[in-house]
Length: 192
Figure 1 (spheres, rainbow, N blue to C red):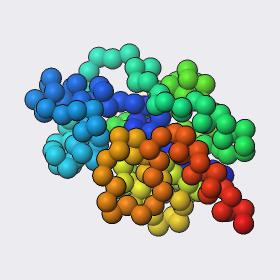
Figure 2 (tube, rainbow, N blue to C red):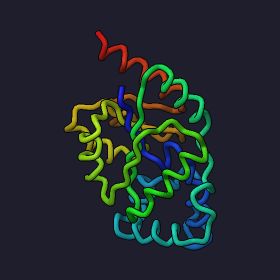
Figure 3 (cartoon, rainbow, N blue to C red):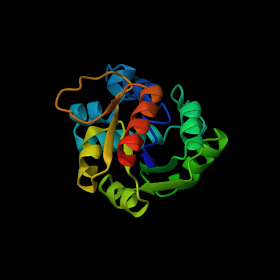
Figure 4 (cartoon, one colour):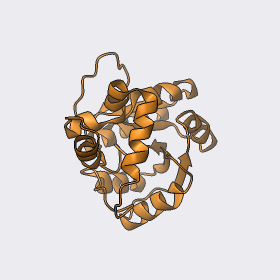
């Protein structure tokens, strides 16, 4: 099975940095759980959120290794790869220069992801997924998953912070271990 993955909020945990930046630089009293794109777009609006992200990313940091992997990413990806699954990373970033940054991150962490694609808009994710034959996609942003719905692929919401799930009728992964089970079930269903 060809599995598509988002980067921030799925592989790399960037929410600690975003929450600290929001509190110290923007005066937003938020927790790590409230630093997701969905929550911040709802709070700030789309344009203000874009300014927030650009300001946050402009902070001096040791890219790309500053953000830790989510728990069980390494073991899960390697186990699924041994079972024959292939991975495509499709991530929206402010510039295409992020391609090299993400590749360096994946290499550093020895993750078995064969294709890395950077897009400038969420809408471009659909085209990239279609070109690479993605059959199942994991993202922490439900609005992005909705943009992918016309492809017919299995959509999995990475709800690692246990946000309210009302209105979502597709698979939900609360951890990477749960995600592995979802991939295996989708692979089994496809094989029937």
